[in-house]
Image 1 (tube, rainbow, N blue to C red):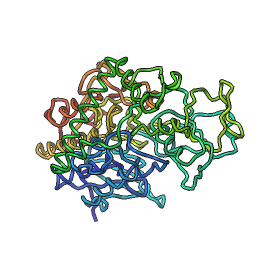
Image 2 (spheres, rainbow, N blue to C red):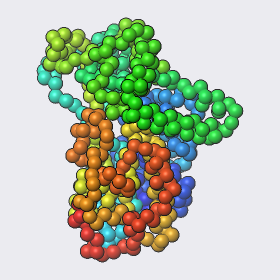
Image 3 (cartoon, one colour):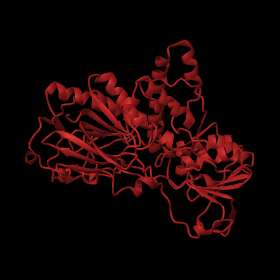
Image 4 (spheres, rainbow, N blue to C red):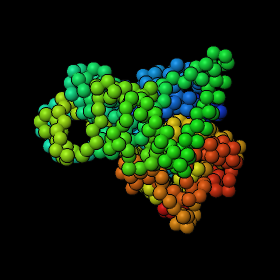
Length: 496
């Protein structure tokens, strides 16, 4: 019996993978596909993270898909609600029969002679199976599911209490009436503090560096009102467009007029806190949107602080003790539970080993093409969401583009589409992201290359990229289309 070959291989059954599968069914209904998910269920981030209060840090009108309106009251949703949304879509489009769960992709190998990708997948029994496909979509997210960022703290082994990382939250952790220290100041720490403060004796957020906060209501009254007078999809489209416009406006204004944005942000913090904030705890050494802005829905973190159930401490850790943390300032923080919300560890393309015609591919040597493919890598697309907006905005337009590309290949009777770059060293380069976030800086050695000009770059501009991916011709003179060829006709030794 001949091995089944599918048109599209999808890695990951989180937001990116689910979105790609639905777009394919809607726009390329005759195409076959197979999905591989290394965990036991769909959802990606939203089935992995189970720490208290886990929620979106983007509004659901943009974190939701363009084809499926978000109809819940809260625009800033909790993790279980987002997971329910994803499962509803999965069932609506009958995707589960296409998904192989507990299936970790070990390697992906491209053959120009066959014009096929071959995935080697490890199942839950530890067996290796293979699956061939004509095009590969990497929807594996941007961070390492197997480990978070874990800095070394002196004396860590001396601490006698509970020490946990949010990415691997114990289901039976009891922190009621206990002293909790959350190390970190990013979105996870900001979420944990008010959620744990509801039952803990006290929660201290220990930060080395402060963060800029954006306070906004968890419910969008205009969105909820519009749904009462028009179809859900119409209301959703209007609010989605408004939010995209607002996000772009705030981001660009923060970059051009940072002092004015700081004044605006601090006014909201002051109002939510009910008092003048401590300058040391609320003044980062960078401007807004040089790192991601932390969302505080309904000001819940500041309410917990105002009520005395939580506090912020800005200091450096000298060492852990048996009963807590000794700070460089000489102060000691007592703790029964310490949460290391110290950040994510980025991973490129799900840590899969890639080869092209027998040669190992290192993405750090390739340039991004239109923010979703790589120079001289055939028949492959990837999603890396926006740092200044929601992930799904990028996932949607990349999925649309892949469908356009597949339809163009069918029209051309082509087997291969490759963003051809003959002289990569001739391009002027710049840093991948104009962000100073620690997780970006730590991953600089694994991130792909970027030029100063399109199409060899990834941007943080959704409206611009939407035009590029959805409106501009697929055949742009750079993307080369061809039939399957013998291996020796494609030069895979080029770094770019």
